Image (cartoon, rainbow, N blue to C red; front, side, top):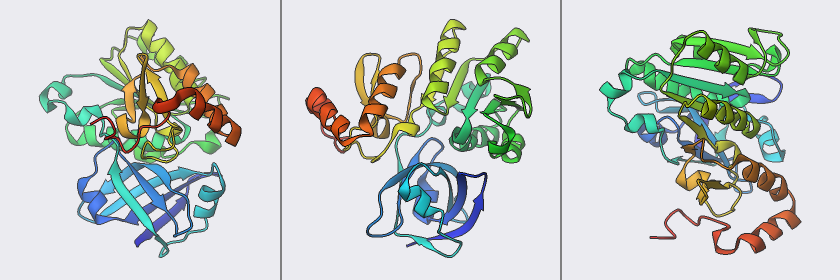
Amino acid sequence: MFKILEKAQLNNTIYKMVVSAKRVAKNCLPGQFVIVRMDDDGERIPLTICDYDREAGTVTIVFQIVGAETKRMTALEEGDCFRDFVGPLGRPSELCEEDIESLRKKKILFVAGGVGTAPVYPQVKWLGEQGVAADVIVGAKTKDILIMEEEMKAVAGNLYITTDDGSYGRSGMVTKVIQDLVEEGKQYDVCIAIGPMIMMKFVCKLTKELNLPTVVSLNPIMVDGTGMCGACRVLVGGEVKFACVDGPEFDGHLVDFDNAMKRQQQYKTEEGRAMLRLEEGDTHHGGCGNCNE
């Protein structure tokens, strides 16, 4: 059992929990995720790791209410336990695999949208610990739903807040801020974007025009987290990939976002899932990640 040590409500639909999970905390890296389950009858929910403390043996998760199970999770309080807390899963951020000295020479821009701020945070924090100060753009529809501003401010080189309605920070979409920064003379070697699929699509459209290499995290489309359900099947450079076992990070300029978003809508109904299984055949799921070995 995995005890919840802290719980906080970040806005009307987003919650943060600090969970005692020593083995996960000991081995995880930014970019990876866990699968949680409330009890024996609960659904498996994949959640990106927001933070971790190896000495304390804790892992922080942030989740948004998107269905019955995440709604049920909001009833858990400090002292309650998760039945399962499995991880770390997925591949760590590509940044963790780079030579540190080379990394310190790079200018890195992060773009976070909505709850995507949570998986951006550990990467920016990790970079700061390596002596790399990354710029971060955080976008939200309104000030009321903005999350983790103070935490991000503490680890980012420069933090740019923007709201769609102009109620806080800059006014407009995250793409406008990217364009503004470039026009102000900012130069970047790589952009990492995490947020809603539609946001990542338009960030990649812009950065491709700017010739700025861009990495996206497709954790928003994961359902099962093991490759078995086929929900996170995506085309990357024309090849079939699965966010949970092949990612969640991919070259954003190669991701077929239109195909992925269309699949997500179709996947929501039982008939849609049946049609996808029929149309995609053997490529519908990614098995355990070792099916082709």
